[in-house]
Image: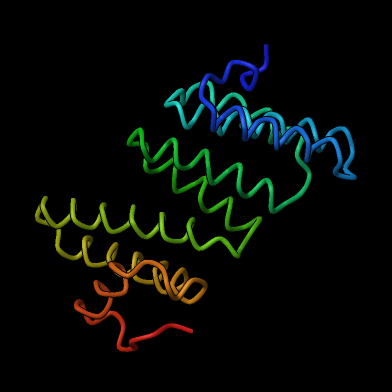
Length: 173
């Protein structure tokens, strides 16, 4: 039974019904529609904290999906799972792949920056200030890119960039 037939709450059921209607009327090929079903089931499983199941659905969606932007979002969601499970290296790999396919994805750039910042803090706590600062510089580069795409977002990152002297401009356009 597809995951979407198991949804118990109103919001998930409503989303599923709407997605099914859209899927039926979209002029796309069968393979793209099937990829979307796996992607939708992956998002549902991920929302419920069923990460292993979500990854299986996302992997299947990747085998079917041909659109590079859509593949980017699948990889991004997979990165979210790995990051939440503490596998930052795998998350970084997936976020970078997502950006290669869809360079207009500020949320992936932000998440890369968050991981580099976290790793920089850990290096500094371990006494390696030079490695920590290098990771902070990498985080700054990714945050600047994300903020340029979405200037009204990532306010904490903008403040961090200013307070650490890594950015002298107030507004990114």
